[in-house]
Length: 119
Image: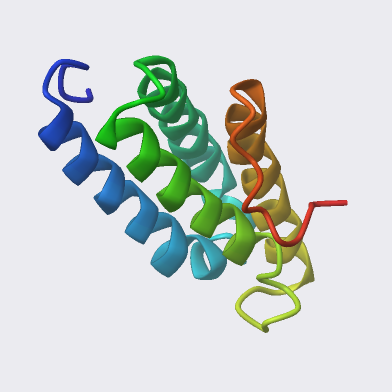
């Protein structure tokens, strides 16, 4: 469970951890199909947290931090295969993760920093 939406500092810290997990573990773990079910669950759960953060209000540190962190995750995971961070199959999974998180940014019009749109 995530911290209460009113505990913005805790949610910012939690989001920072989620972002680091995506960036450091997802490309490697996605190379093994046996991991996909748990990674899918983690991605969907994280997307829900991102959605809550973004809908809590635009003029907040939580909104800005969420946009910045998730934009970075989307940009890196969308090119994981090209950067040799993931195999072909792992890269395809990373692209799905990227698209799932990008969708949350698009819902609030906050995807201006995306450099590599997933195909």
